[in-house]
Image (cartoon, rainbow, N blue to C red):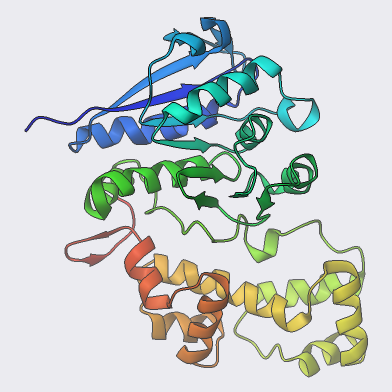
Length: 328
């Protein structure tokens, strides 16, 4: 069967993150083994080879100014992009290539290149969580979503840090070829079906620095050690010998959340892992500490906008014989 060619142009530059290039490129390449027709071309300003973040010299196929129109334009990220102004030539290259592309996507801090090219104005966007505030300040016309894995706004896609580029590439493959081929790609690469774009960039247990207050560290340790235990506000406050009101004030002041929201996020992370491992929604609710399936369903609706059952069907790597983990 003849494959329709889909041209993917990847804009690279000195100091680019190697994984920002290699992760999505491997997804597209692997998709070709299952019937896709992606043709990858690397372009740079001036057509010169570039040196990656790990010191490897990467040759390119063309000067960005001479490149043909692409079906997908992908812009990688680099550590210098949030620190220094985007090179005018790099921004101009993106601005020139984007209108001729069917869709435009950035990986991690590549969003700063899109921003410099004026491609994020009036659009929703994201980048690595460490740099979302800076992206919002630098490009106030963009609507930055600080905790999304990736964001799609029309034909413009932006993604979070490094491995989120793999999630985004899988989402692009699914847009082109549907979920069945994409599951084959995910299993072959030994990754799960892509995470939902609105899913948090990191688990609740890893969000932000560890609290400085010993009381809060004790509470976090207790919740993480056994999410299924009694972690009502009254029980947590009694555990550390403070009043419920004082514990709530401490959480708000240092962690910008409440004890109950924190407990829910820990249980939510565990429930997702259980669903990924093949548990059904009722089992995941019981084993993660939610008092009922209905409370788990409400948590999923708040955080992902879909039900636990839909999450399990949509975002777990599955085969015809039911959910299973990636093949090794």
